[in-house]
Length: 232
Image 1 (cartoon, rainbow, N blue to C red):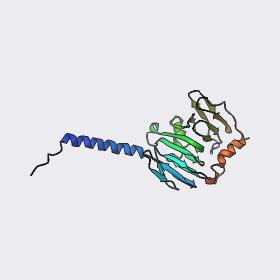
Image 2 (image 1 turned 90 degrees about the horizontal axis):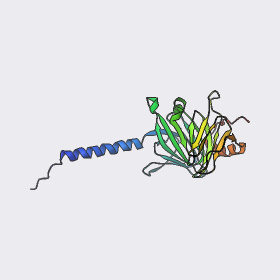
Image 3 (image 1 turned 30 degrees about the horizontal axis):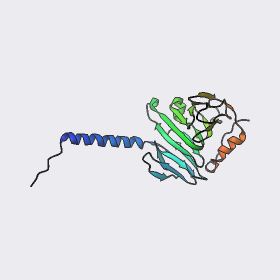
Image 4 (image 1 turned 90 degrees about the vertical axis):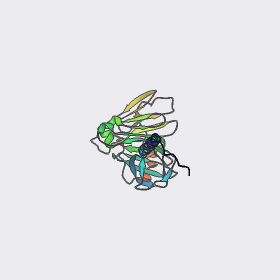
């Protein structure tokens, strides 16, 4: 009878290290970011490994998930730090990073709007360390200082508008920037446009009410509250 040689301890150690690394990477990829508050129509989450799952009220979403809505659909989500995002139809949002723990200096929220209309209201991370929250589009990054923003983006352009904060006593402003320039918007109802990937954000200007209404209308199916509008 032929005996099987025992596995060398070094090989076992290597296998344990590889297994530990795999588990660690999987845990990072599955870091909880928040949950769905409301869905109208059809919405999906796609994880980094390509797994696709339907979203409904109460569904969880994670770091590295891409959240998507279909035609005539909209989605409202809430991060663990109380940041709220609203997405209109045919929209994609990538959750790039989310850390909400102690100490506060480690907290971070980073999301990328790939396409579609959007609205977001910043939460605790932005209120304590504004530099720890950023929302990207394909053509510019929105730096947050505690605020309420709506907009529309696609692969080559973006429109970004500052709105009245939910808390009337809250200071509100954003910095919109790319490699060609940056603008500060600190008056509700004003916004900027980035016409293509080779242009700086336009100087802040008062946005047309029709532009604001069109963006908000795409998300009205999930919202039962009045959105604070800029004072005309």
